[in-house]
Image (cartoon, rainbow, N blue to C red; front, top):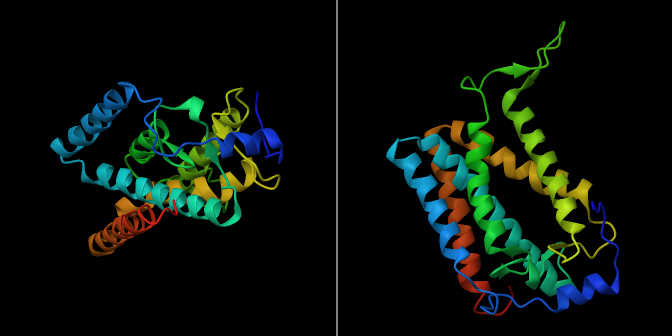
Length: 222
């Protein structure tokens, strides 16, 4: 059921080769329902003026898009991306490594992670003796990163190829360290940045995402 590393198999390569990015062949109305849920969550937080929660969501989601763009570029340059989603597992593929459902989940993941933190975000956990403990934001980041990496290993092991790892050196451990830890560092730390620094981070992050998408999609790179 769980798959911890890519196997470099021809079957995995065939699934990737068959991917139809931005094809509407499998499109259905769940696309609209999921979008409505995301809008509801964000506008509920905005209405309550929970700006830190909104910043957490946007920070992680922006990092997610930068990673997906990078993954698509790697796929174009080397023949296969680090991760992919199959046609059979989604209603719409945005980029070779991300489906609509997956992307919308990541739009909420930062909000979820931030809300799971204690009200006092300066709190430290696992303190004993002279050891002052680990910051709760870091513990939350590592816990969520591990959970998501393990769930991705489940997706990679599904029979319909919901998630595809081609390269034998890519799997749970590199996903945990290089992907999900940065994701949740963004959601757990960006909201507490100084306002000016936070503003620069979020504007720069999303400006870069916009520029890359506007340039690379028409050029056929991603």
